[in-house]
Length: 152
Image (cartoon, rainbow, N blue to C red; front, side):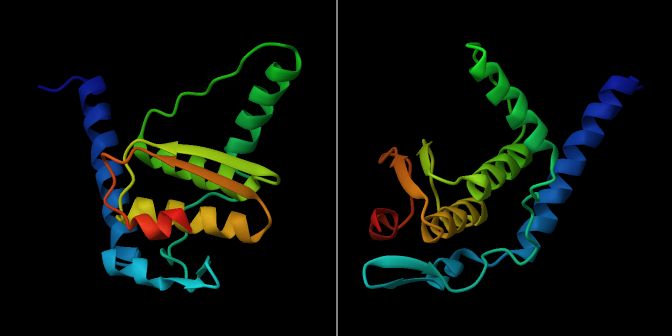
C-alpha cells in the first residue's frame, strides 16, 4: 500500500504531466516557428505561440518572491529562489521577461524549437520590442533552433 507521501508525490507528477499535455494541446506546433517573421533584420511576433497564455500576470506570487530577493540585495545579502519544476521555471522566466524594463541577460544550455522554446523566444522578442536590451547566450552543442533566428 502507498503511503500518503508517496500518493501525494504521484499525484503531483500526474498533475504536472496533465498540465503540460493541456498546455501542449493549446499551443502551436513546431512549425509555429514560422510565425516569427523577420522584417528589416528584426524579429516580430506575428501571433502568440500559445493561445492558452500560461504565463502569470504581474499580480502573481513571483512579485512577492522578487521583492524578497531584491530587498536582500539592498541589505548586502544575496537572494536565491530555487525553481524545482519545469512548469514553475517556465512561468518564472515568462513573468520576469514581461517585468523587465532595461535589460535581460539569459543563458540557455538547451534551447529548442519546442513549445517551451517558442514561448520563451516570443517573450524575449516582445521584451526587445518594448525597448528592453536582450542578450541571449546559447550553448551551441545542444540547440536545435534556427541559428539565424537566434542571432536576430
